[in-house]
Amino acid sequence: MTALDLAMGASSVPGLHGGILVEGPATRAEARADAAGGAPAEPRRREVLRGGITIGVLERFAAAGSIAAGLPEGLALVIAVKGVGRFTELEAPEARERFIIGTFASLIWATVAGLVVHLAIR
Image (cartoon, rainbow, N blue to C red):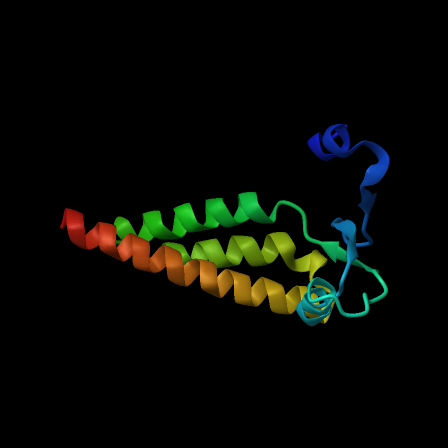
């Protein structure tokens, strides 16, 4: 039994690729229309990749740490491990797009933070 099962009981539905199916507006535009009092869109089920927050935090610590230590090649290792770990879950184009954008945003932030630390301790 996983922590998700304990927290959510039978209310979480596993997705086809190991994620969790959630119901709600499929796009941000639909969510804004709902919030503005427009006609609510038909809720759609979409799959959310599991472990994203934990993986993201670990990714940023590893990336910032490798830059702070003066080992920028550590970024290649972080990207490789993350790509291999999520490879089977990235069949849907939307998931691939979110994965790439999120990874780049996360690595840019972590690289800048690591560079600041590296320059401060130098």
